[in-house]
Length: 116
Image (cartoon, rainbow, N blue to C red; front, top):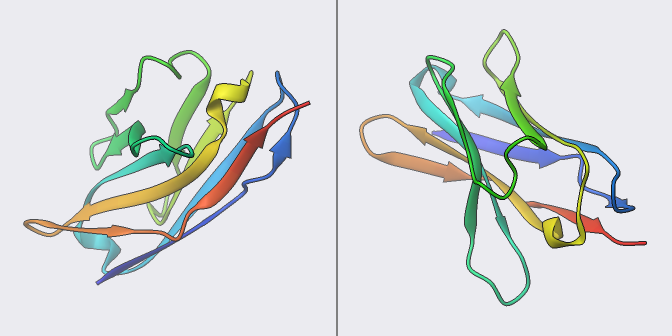
């Protein structure tokens, strides 16, 4: 099993920055990739960014150049640095880990609100 806990969500003004954290526990050595998703009210959950075990990253077009996904040396924490936030970034942000041959785990989500 892999468990995930997100933190770092907050209310921030447009143009501001936030850093989200996703702490993994359990069988973290089985993790193949970690991704951040978000879901805004009335919209489907969408992929924001992902990082593979080898370090390669991928971003949604809407966040390229503004968001950065990274991880610590122990590979048990993944971060999402969000800069130049826009009201359209308002959503619940979820961490997802793909692990083992075909399993995945989700965190409980953290609310990000961008508003003046």
